[in-house]
Length: 179
Image (cartoon, rainbow, N blue to C red; front, side, top):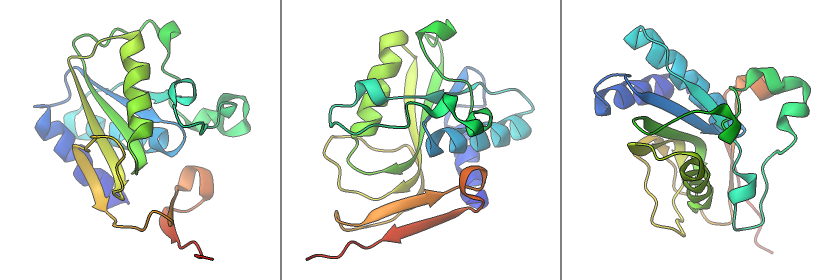
């Protein structure tokens, strides 16, 4: 996972001609942790600070799924970047925003993320970085930066474990029994 994050960080820098006007928005939970890792890598490489925020898409989802809305009430809230919202007073007008998520599946989470961002501001450009692209898109969404393409069956589940939450960096594929 460390090597993949390093590669994606370099790709983001190259595609954006450096880190100027770059903002990373990580989808809660593991996308936000991944965004923090990428921001640290980019900051180390470019020797400049890269803003990074957590993005809660719960209110923008159209499929009834929820993220951890009570995340910042929990004990581990300090490991996540600040929450992006209208109250941040963050103007993304001239920014190159990179949405970061752990797994890209149907595309609905990313659509909700784009809706959330564009309700607050209008970035110059929005790009997408994902650790795992497992296919099965329901919407015409494509990642700009992909850690690993991992073809799966729709019935399978992909679990990303991260050291900050789980004590280990690992990706598990759970095969669901077809009964």
